[in-house]
Each structure stands twice: as structure tokens, then as C-alpha cells.
Length: 634
Image (cartoon, rainbow, N blue to C red; front, side, top):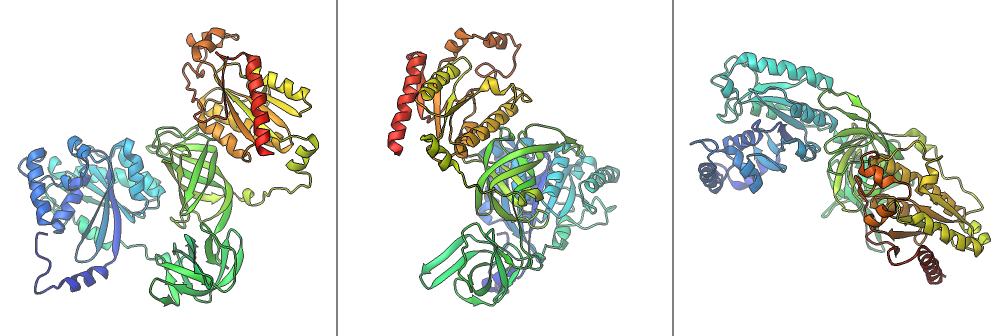
């Protein structure tokens, strides 16, 4: 580093011990593009002497090469690690850096300013105690300033510092600073920040960063360093209710059974009465074990193994709480979602919900509204697009323990995963569990699906015919049903056109409505299978995710996807209803194959090529397939 660390006056051991005793503040820098976030963090690292000599030499060389700051060092290059970032002069990814002063240690996240990288900014804010919102003194408050500030409030960032940067470019004008300060404080109050620290500074020259500004003697407040050193770190974790998500059931031998994980919040003692969720079984803490010792007490943030006095069933993903102060339990929630994918979120589409170690199937049942982050207006919508923030209700396929996000950031947060790509597509915060969900239980009945199917002497199932309009789905399905009926089978056919006269008459043909259309049909088909029927479903069902959702509603072996493979040009040449002609003329919008996509099955159960087989031959192929499947399952 700039100065040798291991001097006669300060030994390495003493230095390490000193650093360990300092508290840690996590903060982010955010704002709009070119507000100087990377330069500011570079200045903090440089002035706090946290740059090694070889880094300094590389920085000097790169600064001359890039030529963005004349003869001065470009401190932003310390953060712009990606080649694309250096070429464009912007931050794309989240860069984390550590530095320390005499009073405190810091981990700072430099987050992107571009709107398309808002998801990266939300990632950085999710673990931050404070946020430094940068504003270019020449530009004032921008849309992205408000967007990032709102996300900070949403994610529970408790402290906001408004850093009005580039004051050197406005001649250190006091009136400019005060106008920006007043405008921001008014906005901050609306999103829930009663107090905001506002500091005029120049990251390039270092004024008011770590040393007081020579050219701004009119400002009597603290420097940025002083403000960061005095922000109170949240030390209330140990005072909150005890929350212990179980990450692993530790059973090395027959004589030991413990539950391992990291304490999310609160304190636990040997002898405490606990409850395990979701089973609600109770016991007492018998021992608290770590790698090298046994404890009488453990606190928030500690990784421990708990053993209990009673043998109760606890699995990975369960939560251990104090008996008298337990977490909530629900499978339906009102949540806030920050959408992070190019493909929009739609109600009815199936995703994976992951909170801690819990992963379960999730469906957004309703988008109540999307938030305009500039005006904070609530607007109606049927979908969430990239970087949008919406208030939604969601449904899971099982109950999970939780706390509202405002009470516990760990047990109240979750991510949304795309089932097909396994990509993280959204982040969410639980507002509350829907109380009605806890009062709804599956009613046990004596006559079940097995009994209904047995009296019909058949295996209930769904034959899901998918393909373009005009492919021949309904014709083939009708022929199959006639053969099944003649053989004494109990069937029912659900046709895409027919159900739109009743059950789905309220739906249009937007992508969102198509998703809901298939969701309803899949649920109806599931009920009919429960009644013991063979259900023939003839729907275009253009999206793989909805067909997969329908399959997942049923038990293995009950769903059969039949792809009626007819090329678009053949379907269009048939055009018995004249729909393709109208779509080509622009009279019908969102028509599958023309201006709305059809996603061909990648692994269907049966493929029917109608250019090679007649409708009768296709129907016979379906019957042969069913007989083969029946033989395999008997």
C-alpha cells in the first residue's frame, strides 16, 4: 500500500486485532449514469491508502492509456474491472470493495447507473445498511436518482446520503447545491426518509470526501468520510425474535442428530422452548454446538448446530423459533416484486420461489399495480416488464415460515427463478401472508380419484393436443374421443373455441390473457382427471411454460402432450375460418404464427405429422400410443 503496514511501531498481529474490533458498515453508491460513483469509491480507496503499490502503478498506466482525465489519475478505473466497462466508461456489474479508516471498516458496492442494469443495483442494495445517492451538480435530480432511492426504501436501506458531486464544475455554487438538496429532501420524505444527509463534494479533487472543502467554506456539515463513520450500524438483530432456518440435518452417527444453519435473527440459549415450523412440533434446546466448542448461548449471525431434547421431524428448509414468538406460516402472500428479466412476468405463469433454502413452485395470482418510480403513482397492469416494480399476490404449492420483510430482511425476502432456464428473473419482499390462506384446507373425501377411476375401469389422464390454428387438433381429438367412447371409455373434450363461449369469455388474446386461458383450462382438466375421466384438451397453448405448468398439476403419467405438427404455410392454406387472412391484413392482433410466437414442444410425448398422415391415421396413432402406455403402466 502507499505506506508500509508492518512497521516497528505497529505489528501485523496488533493491526489485525485492531481491525477485528472495528464495526462494519455495508453501503452502496448509486445514481444516474456519469454521476461519478466509481470515481468517488476510487477516491475513498486512494485517500484511505487501501491501494497496493502495483495497483497504483497499473492505475497510472491505465489512466494515461484511457485518457479520460488528462494528466490526472482516473480513479474510476479501480472499480471498472470489466473490459466493456472501461471501453464504455460505465459500470455494468456490481463491484464490491473493502476499505477502512481509523474508526470503522467498510464494504462498498459500486452499482450501475444505466436503467437496464437496475437489477444489479437492487442486488447491491439488498444487503446494504446505507446508500450514497450521487447527483451530478450540473444535472440535478434525475429519473434514475428517484428510481434508485425508491428501491433503497423498498429494500430497507435505513440511511441515505445525498452526495452532490462535481461541484467543481458549477464553481462550487451554494445556491445550486441548496436547490438540489431541497428538491431531494421533498422526494425522500414521500418514500419514507425523514432525515437525509446532504453533502456537496468533488470526487475528482477529493473535496469534502475525506477532507473538508477549501472552496466550499459555506458548508459546515461533515465530510462524506465523517458521515459514514458516524452512521449507526443496525445492532438490533440480537433483540429480535429468534429465527433459525435449518440448512442441514447433521447426523454423523446414530448417537447424534442436530440441525445446522446460521441464526438469521435473535438469541438462543440451552433450555429454551422452541417450535419447529411448519410442523408446529415443540421441544427444548439440548445443546448448541460449533466446530470446536459447545455454547450456552448463540446470537444472530453465528453458524451453529442445535440439538433438541425430543426426537421431532425437522427437515432442510424448516425454521426453528422460540415457542412463544414464532414466525408466520402461509402459502399465499402479498409481495413487492422487482422484475429483472427481459421476458415479462405474467399472472398464471409458473415460476420457482426461493427464500433461504426453501424452494417451491410459485404462481403470481394477481398484479395489483405497478409503481411509477418517478411519480410513485400506482398504475394498473397485466404484466411486469424489465426493471418494473409491482405489488402482487402470489400462491405457493406449500406453506413456508416467513416474516414480513420490514421486520426481517432474511426471512421476508425471496428470489424468483425461471423453471426452464434456471435464471433468477425477479426479487421480492413479503408484505404479509394472506390471512384467508391459513383458513383454507384441502377437504378430505372418502370417494377419491382412484375409486372413481376403478368404477370406470380406466386410467384417468389428459391428452393435451397442441399446435397452430388450423393444424387439425380438434379434428383429431374428436376422432380419438369417438374411438374411446365406442370402447366404453368415459371422456370429455375441452376445445379452445368452445370454452371461450363460457368459462373464458372474459379473456382476450393478449399474451397475458392466453396465459390465464391455459391456467384455467389446466385446473379444469385436473378436476376432471380427479373425477376419473380421460380428458382431451385441444388448445393452441403456444407457450412451453404453460404446457409445463399443466403437466405439473397432474401426477406422473397422467399428462400426455401431443404435438399436432403442421407447418404454418399448410395451416394458412387451409384457413377454414379466414383467420390467417384477417391476421395478415392486420385485422386480428396477437395471432399465433403471425405476430405472436408459437413455441414448439421440445420433448412431447407424441408427434403427429399431418403432412404425412391423414386425420384418421393420426387418431389411430394416438389410440396405439395409449394402448402402449397402458401396457407399460399395468
